[in-house]
Length: 157
Image 1 (cartoon, rainbow, N blue to C red):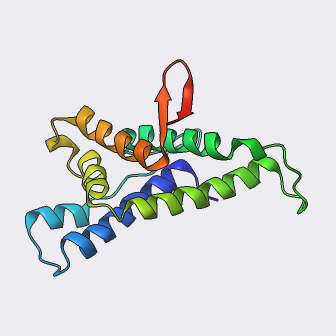
Image 2: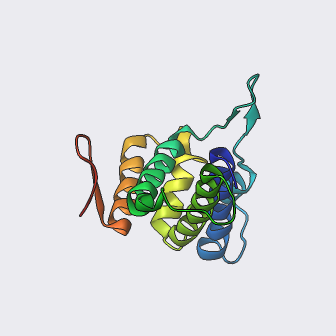
């Protein structure tokens, strides 16, 4: 069971690995690749022990995926857990596994890899942050065949 910062760090590491495999299979070292390899999300512990990271733009992506998860799998929240686990722990475990599974699948798409790199590694250079976020939103909404309305919430497309 992983927390949001740890899931986002794992996502970035997966994106970096997939970049190397799909886009730089020869392992060439140039300034672009070196910058990607050397970039890490910082997970800092604050006084109240709540982790923070330098991935605030990935937070919106995370929240949309979490909302879609609740939309798709929210009908089973009152199920009986025969193994004696707490519902919160059960939800955290299933959500963590689903997040990793979904994002691993997303990493098969070059545009997703580029969008994550643009929102993290190349953020200071990315002048069109809103456009990058919209591209990621479009990708996940199309993938799950849902629409997000400000008044209605998430609805099937």
